[in-house]
Amino acid sequence: MEPKETLAMVQGQAEIWQQMFGFVDSMALKCAVELRIADIIHSHGDPITLLQIASGIDSSSPDIPYLARIMRSLVRKNIFTEHLPPDGGETLYELTQTSRWLLHDAEQSLVPMVLMENHLWQLAPWHCLGQCVKEGGIAFKKAHGCEMWDFASKNPEFNKIFNDAMACTAKIVMGVVLAEYKDGFGCVGSLVDVGGGTGGMIAEIVKAHPHIKGINFDLPHVVATAPVRQGVSHVGGDMFEAIPNADAIFMKWVLHDWSDDHCIKILKNCRKAIQQKSGKVIIVDIILENDSNGLFDETRMAFDLLMMAHTTGGKERTELEWKKLLEEAGFGRYKIIKIPTIPSIIEAYPE
Image 1 (cartoon, rainbow, N blue to C red):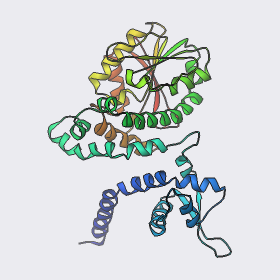
Image 2 (cartoon, one colour; image 1 turned 135 degrees about the vertical axis):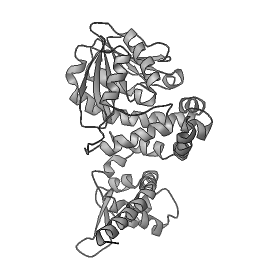
Image 3 (cartoon, rainbow, N blue to C red; image 1 turned 180 degrees about the vertical axis):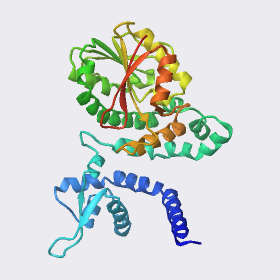
């Protein structure tokens, strides 16, 4: 075998090993969140030693060698940094811009999302993807006996974990949307957030644009746990049946949860709820670009398989797929606004 071929074979083998153990990074990250390592370092205000981290862990006898190995892995992945002080003392660990997203009480944090996506309930459906390819069906249902939304309605603990995760991503994405889409809300008098969870997103919009009458619309068991929010009314219902009337409809990461047929039904109900001439639907969702290597493109591709694992026929879509979907639902015009986060904004207008 030629040297080039040998090198290619070795590189290929190395790639498979790396992919095979991809879950290790997720589990180390989950471990860091559960142990509140970022919070412990942050509370000291300065870089700290391994023993200082251990003393902050909620345990009477933490295993220091185990902790050292976890930290070694997290440092290698640039979650934390380590350095030896000039006086030759113990290794000191410090936060990075990455680990600041793992602070539990930070204004913007990915902690609830890390915990939700790496929970056993959410990991189980991933083991059913091969079965889905062979015979069709829904991975989550194969793993748990029912679809995710039914599972959430019957399981308060899962419902809370899921809603917390959605709320944290909503806060992050909405910060970008509000900064990049200021003019888009200016002429809107009333706005329905379809699938708005506990109302965090619509509350942020109304806070930034107080002239808007906000309506948070979601399933009854979801809005039942929603807190009182100024300028927002909570409405329970089913988006497949009807959507409250408003000047505009807002949907963040809703349509990617559903098949094309389901999405067309939702969008047709949106069309009925807005004015023919002045209404619009504001969609915040991922647009796949197969050959792009942008900052979030790997994550966008991962989200597509995430939809396969957790939703009822959900998927991420290319611009061409979005165009077809909107046209079939009666939206003849659309505009894409790219923003510096995972999803983009799609404005859709009735024909």
